[in-house]
Image 1 (spheres, rainbow, N blue to C red):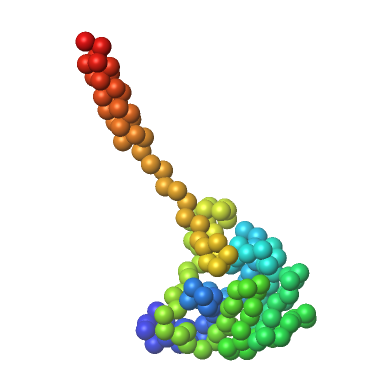
Image 2 (spheres, rainbow, N blue to C red; image 1 turned 180 degrees about the vertical axis):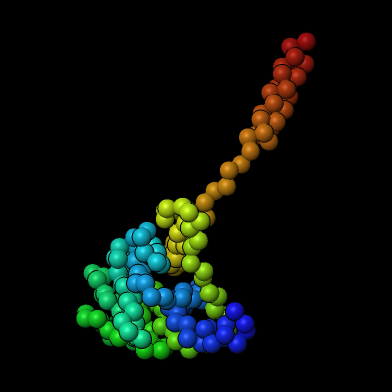
Length: 172
């Protein structure tokens, strides 16, 4: 694709931007879901978010927000109970997390999150996007990396040798 075709394609791209982390997720012809459950397009680990809280569906040239969250969803500060057609710049509150619907250029500093590449694997926890967590409610989870047991064994061996040397010196 030449650069002019790419810029035209980027100009017609539609994104949902996670404001706190400055990340943009590209919307496609498929439904896009946000919620606490692992099957969602964006997973938010927050108590005020339902398992499947919001679904953004393409309907013609527009995107329509369908909410099913028990705690409610707001668009531009107003509670949404029925399907709502989104416009450029609409602010979407899902629990305590704020998103912005964008048809125009993305603001500076916003990075685009690539969709997961399955490479012939089934969609599972290893192929999901990174979970969004609210830093106010507990920060991000960083799994512990496996450590080698060899340094620990060396320390234990040195301590045993030192103890044995002390024991034999004191007993003589």
